[in-house]
Image (tube, one colour):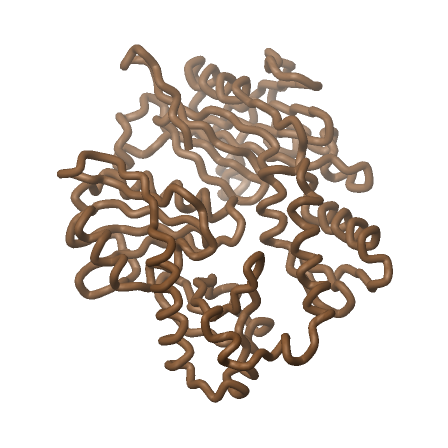
Length: 440
């Protein structure tokens, strides 16, 4: 979330947002709020209690929909988005000023009559109120964007509102390479696996997985990395598949190592509780806070694999002993790899702290009380922590509560886009340990 600087304080401030699958970015004034869910973006004026000035024209909303255009799915073609379907009860409809974007851009403006849930005879005496709308359809290479703007019932759209929405749309910058949607991505992964491992059976499984000679690989984390660098599909996917193939080649002694050989490689790892479902039930795990669970891995240098229940039986370890051993190794790792951080604010009044370098063991450091003490020394007795993914966390001082809302929005955005996501919830570190942050 990068803010653009303006020399004149009276000029509006903008925040840059990424569209679905990072197909495009665009700028949104900070006086507006944006909600994102999969392929849809909804933009509207902020309510007065959100910290913005009272908007002279509240009630309008603009919805943006982005889709990968596939000839086999005619319902996603531009022709399927007609004003009569999006704005029922059309009274007038005319072409309007086109956007200044590459590709094919079309714009319509018009007015519709809203539907009222009242008996028909009452509508004869008091017709349903009308509302004004705009519709933009942009087709660029494989991507289509449909944006619709609607006024409150009974009120027209002001020129200022239309201009604001046009400016947002005209700020769209398309990516040089488009990440294909999940199902096409899975097909490309299958083709890549068949090319590099021709002797292994490769087939699609589950909702978003592939089976590589009987071993199921969930593609969610690969896809999260891929949408940031779609031109690097081979570099992102092939190492993970190669690691699976190597596990197939390991003998029983390597798959079930003796404890003396594995002891120093056992590490804790945070994992989203929602994903630790039945498919993960064979692995050792312990509930934590904020929708997170603690799992345990064997570090294999370039990768890791989860510790499963059979290993505990083989090692004759209890869960408590496994946890203590993993935490000891985490402390050794922390001592040998001091956490380098970037600090926002003065030394006497620090506001925010983030790790400089990503690491698979960055977020799990929050399990250690030693780090809690250091963070509290820098940021105050109580602090807020966001852990959107495995490799990154952000800590904010409670002495600066105005930052919490901003951090919450960024954590949610990072959780939705980063690989190895953990949680969109915020945590609190205090003298009592770690708990989930509950906004008053």
